[in-house]
Length: 76
Image (cartoon, rainbow, N blue to C red; front, side, top):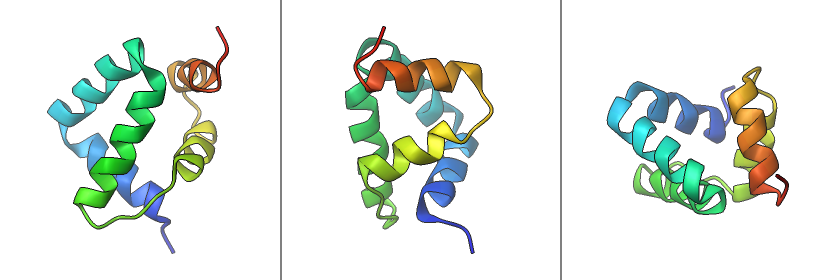
């Protein structure tokens, strides 16, 4: 079974504009980007928590995502 976070991630990945907007937001305000991801989920009736998003993203094999998550957690 696919988790809600994975469904949401796949949905965002398919929408280039949404993906770019989140990337720009993440560069300047990473915590706000997490909030926006959750809001997109709510808009599409895919309920996720901030913690679920962070946990899911931390499993991805993507160096840029891992650095961004460090910023979300208050590092860098």
